[in-house]
Length: 199
Length: 199
DNA sequence: ATCCTTCTAGAAAATCATTCTATTTCCGCG
DNA sequence: CGCGGAAATAGAATGATTTTCTAGAAGGAT
Image (cartoon, rainbow over all chains, first blue to last red):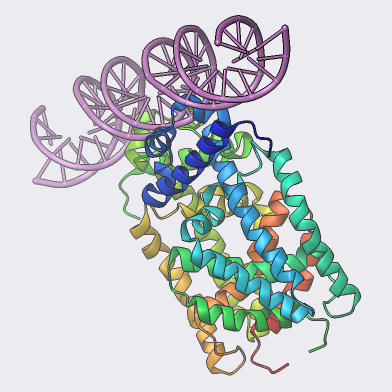
């Protein structure tokens, strides 16, 4: 934001972009400091100056993409009037995102994603709180309106995101899923699982 | 099986047990070859002889526990007559397993689990095929009987296991889920999502 | 008994992450 | 201008960890 640090910002970008490129080509085992410095042309010193460690770099990369994904999901939610259409919007946004950003999607689903927060715990919470809060509020709102069954929030989230994440991961890993079909079928099925209506 | 390799088997056990112990105490970053050799009393040479690499060791550990989990799930399925009770059995078996084997559960959900198969891809497939096939057959059977909606198998699996895995991971990571409540509520909800009945 | 394979052992080599010190860049301020 | 200092860059040195390598012990088959 401040007009300062022109250099710094640029190298941070270079490093993050290079890291994703390296990950895409060499996978997680290939994601080393040397590979990233080579791919970015940035020196080792700069990498450590900006990120502190290799995990710090990967965490920052994860945060960037997680932020984008959550941002798109929140936007999708804001344009949905009913809970039912909200679920559809969430599902489709998530699947589209993964399709359009395959490597980032792999990184988000895979390996280091749960280690995330170890090096940037505080920043992560603050940064994502702004995204997670509206989603929780959205769920609470529709629970109150009697559309969504009155279950604990974490269970509702598991029911909604679990199948979507599972399908996305499966597409990324094995490719034995048709994403279009998933986007068509899953929302309706997920909706049935959280709807307040009796069966 | 063969009466050979008395020594070998024992050290393999020692190493796998020690690795889980180390992981439980020191987390993933602490899971190093040195830590495992120290904790097991087995030499570095033996470790590499049996597993080839640290990832090979971790993969073997994952396979062992994944095999146990799938085994319990298949057993649970065999004792269920209807598709509905099958879903309940699967869910509860999974959640109980994670509760009873917390460290193994963390390992299965976390970090290295998706790297799995990189070092032991072939063995993994062969070893788990025996477990996965009956589960797929079970699903197919109940689809034919008209109980489960006629969706592609991967989508059904995502719908069934997604929420369960999500809840388990959440319990392991944040602890903000009541496992008993999840075991009570999820099966019914999941069932609604895959049932062939109209809504 | 001796040969062969498997297994054990740990030192040596290679790889990778991190620290450290020196140097450059660039902004604010006299 | 040009000086001072903070931020950034650079890469050599260090430290930790994985992997390889060579040597030897254990145990069974012929």
